[in-house]
Length: 353
Image (cartoon, rainbow, N blue to C red):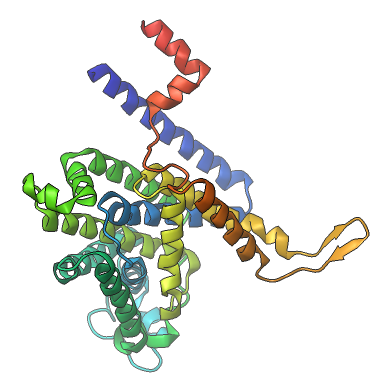
């Protein structure tokens, strides 16, 4: 058993090494557009995996990600801008002290974004988890709209509708994929731990879980706060990737996209969340070809704006018909499965015997 665990740990480290070697090659040989897609994919992986923790693993229908991403984005952006840049940006009302004089390195701004967002998630969890089901969805949806409305009107902190512009482009492949890797390792360990088992028990039957000694409220609050921390950091990464943020960026549409990703990948599967995020990030760009003018024989087909969303919707419909539990269902990737499928794995297992 010990040897089996050590083997899996070594394979995980080797996989991470291969990933970062590929990222190094990407920085040398791919275009800026493709690097931006890779960064976007990594951020969506982080958001999908952590959103799946509360919705899929713990089974709580929450619609809050746009709020947490907004809090993290504004926190990180305000901390990385210099006092002079803030003075230029805040033209209607000056930014409040001490934000007007604070500037910290990018790493610490991400840490602060995660902590501030987790704090709001912790406070929000107390009233939110007094309700269940559809009521929980409505409350968290309302929270997202409240955060957006506050960001739109709190001029001395968020600069209101003008937002924050000219942010430093700190987010690169190392930051985005490094944090995505950390998120996957952390969430994977958490789900496999006794806390993860408690979350799954709450998902299956909250009353039965409490009867067996699981504190359902504390378990849901842990999942919610953990999800908030990682979504806040992802918000900081997103802000410094697009370099301009405003309240209009953090609408329910962001939450809706994440919901599509985790449902399509398989609600309750971390692996499915990763696959769904990759398909959503790259598939949306690949489908742009259907919006361009095409020539089929003598037939000229003009470009139709928005056609890729129609194709995307058709794909989702087929997915709902033929894979109702998503691509992965609740299954997870494992090295045992991969080695059992590969010729190298069968060779290794043969030598082990």
